[in-house]
Length: 300
Image 1 (cartoon, rainbow, N blue to C red):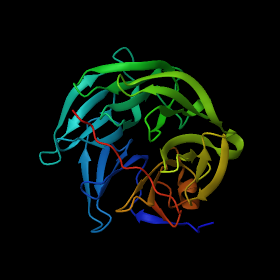
Image 2: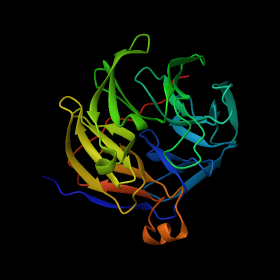
Image 3: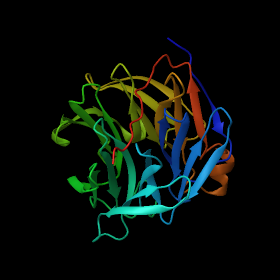
């Protein structure tokens, strides 16, 4: 068994870091701070970090094939121009739910951007129930809804042959699989493939997939990323962090063998932060003996 080592990547903590995405074209890591309304772009070689302000809570960011990025922020999809630092709204969702917001998102192999919403969340992981939806920003700019009655829309991943989409709605305490029609971008036949116990494992949050088809799931409240086998439903190993509220993960680096993990300190008291001072930091893990699949761009 390989020995993994987790260290801080960016020492300055945020409030609710989420959605790490490795941009292999530029060698930079994109991620967001939801509550601070920031998109970050960090270079692990130079350690330089650019921060882009948004006008609402931002749940996800992915690079755009033609340049810049696309974000899911508040209840809108928008293009972010890195040069001018301007946001241009493409589409708005959940117009009957003004307190909803986007939470997590990722692109499929056709370059469609999938992102889901959740309800107002006065306490971390305790939102208004069943008022979110999973949406898809098509490459032509149109938006389709995959399904609704979502609690906390979270992690997404696809198998290497694109026949299966994995998805986490956190308060179901499972990873669900869908049959995925790559041509139309339609998920169907939903079923749980991995289940968790909140009191032991925590709350499943963001996730990524490795080249062996195993999933890595960040578990909120227990400070760990769990590797699971979606074919057998078994937990394979756990990577621990000195920050209980681990939120998401992705593979990055030139060889896609470094895992980047985001965390949060949202909802913490001063005493909590004193106890867990690294909460809200970005971590990197080496020595896992696993490699990820390249992060995909929005092709619109």
